Image 1: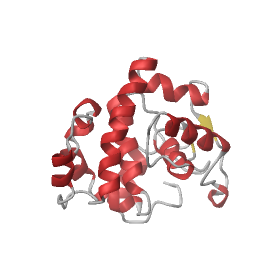
Image 2: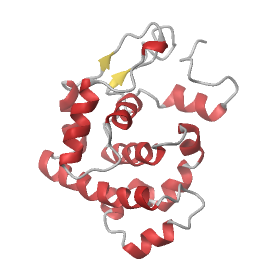
Image 3: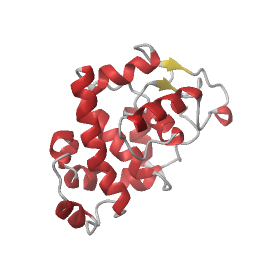
Image 4: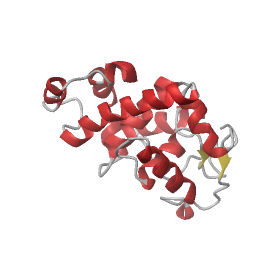
Length: 186
């Protein structure tokens, strides 16, 4: 079975993530918030590091419930800075709370985060039709536009590179290589 070349042979965590989640279109707001929080946490780190701490994040950030995360206090943030189950970066922890607040505002304006985000791709996944993964971009004009819009809405840790990774992971774009068995499935 052929997979995207970024999946290391024998790495069960990466393989499961690739096979079951990466590129699968998301339509659940709580899952959207999880992905947004984790992609922001990944900034400057490997995705493997974040995947390995995902359950720590789930516990620390209240099962990725944006309404609960938005209520975290400065005391809670200080406690999370000591939590070995997550990346203990003060700015990233604070951005989770700020992003939860912005997320709730988007939900109020658009009815759901899902309705907001899918508008950027016309309601369905964009197929990048990658035959050679070395041509996979890190940033696109679309990720730049989405990043800019998220920032104007108060989101943080949403630069165009992070946003493109977010778009790939959540299935807004299908960046599975065309020879990958998942390409036609998602």
